[in-house]
Length: 185
Image 1: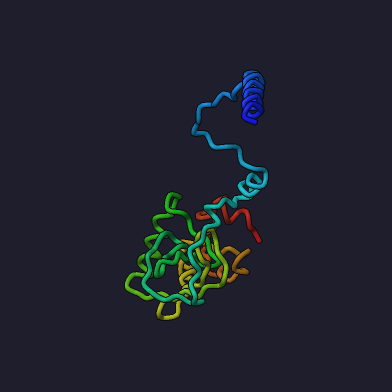
Image 2: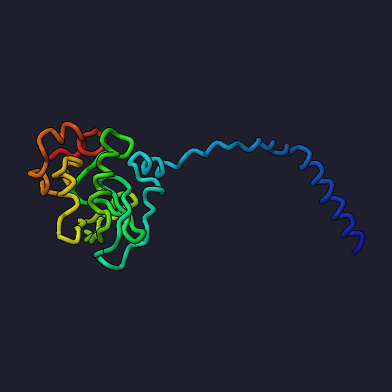
C-alpha cells in the first residue's frame, strides 16, 4: 500500500514538473497611477455631466422650509443651517466672472443681520437645494437681485416670474453661455 502511494506521488510530481516547466509565468507589469478606462455606461454618465461627485447631495432637510442666518456663496447661492440653497428662477454671475463679486456683495448687504426663510421646492441643482427665499419683511431675494441688476431671470425655470424686473441692459451685461443661453424661452 505504501509503495502505491509513493509511486503515485512520484508520478504526480514528475507530471507537475514537466507540465509546469512549459507554462511561462505571466510577467508582472509595473503599477501606474493612470486611471483604468471607464466602463461604457460610466462614459455615458460622464458625457451627460452626471458624475458621482455631482450626484452627491447633502441629507435632505425634513422640513420644506428652512429659516436662519445666511452665509453667502455667490449671487444665487446661500447656506442656511448647513444646507446649500440655490435661488429658484434666477442666474447670477459666478465669483470669477465679470460682475460676480458685485453680485455676491449685493446679496451679502441684503441678507446681513436678517433671518432668511427658504421655501424648498423639492428640486436640487448639483449639490444645492432649490428654494424661493424671503427676507423677514417678505421681500423675495431673487426678485431683489434681478431688480438691482445683479442677476437675470431664467424663464425656463421661473416661467418668466422675474423678467419684468430686469433693468434695461442687464441681460446683455450678465448673460453668459453656460446657463442662460442654453435655456432660452
